Length: 322
Image (cartoon, rainbow, N blue to C red; front, side, top):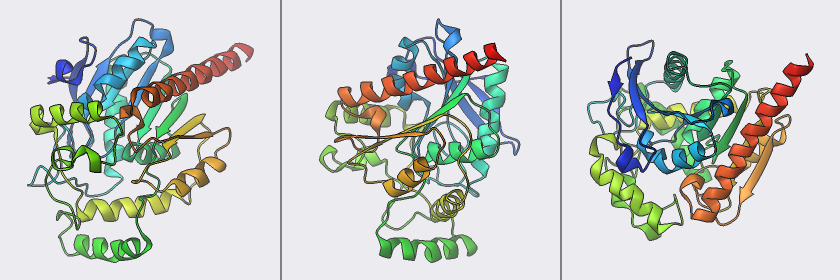
């Protein structure tokens, strides 16, 4: 694989981070960034980012996880970060079919193997990444455990807007207008167009400034609002997933009590029927738990790390008894 650009300084990530280009089966070029820790026995966390996110956005989280002994591999989904964009307007958050993201997952897993990322492997999915990750698990992705923050298993929409979103987004895609921005959105970066006081991501003003610094510096990494096609595909995918059984994988899900972007009832319902699954609400936290105030952020990282370590130890004990 060829080396790809990575900006560890701007990400505030460990300076041993490197990035590579890998290719999905349909030829889409995908970027992955990786950091290897000094304790390979604790395996690798495969990070599935949310919508608009990219490798460098996880710099501080990567630093925390590496300090705890984990290696980390992060992917830029198609249409985001430095991976190939899907529309003529590079700021449009678009996907042709939701299942196309599974091609990116396959490319990521292929890269993890070629880069000899230490096993066991774990999955950490945030928001959109949790939706992509759940589908990947159902389709047979093998990891020792998974953790989800603010999982987007249903978009939070008022009943009237949800009722209108289905036919409008379907019609737009059917008429070849799937690339058009969804109503109320445009090509502006969220953090550059939304004052901190109005943002729905974090309660931490310093972390919001971290986002802004990245948005102003890593201009080629940014995207704006979602397309009508993305909206339709996401509504269809979350509806489909709601009918699927949860996989037999140890799972931890975390959501903030002040999350205004995902439908918590869908998370609660999913986790209530996930064998051995654990669901915790984090008090006074908004959508992006890993970018919240320090106490929330460190608490979430510690819970995720401990979950993975316990799952790894349990699996090792089973193998020793076999």
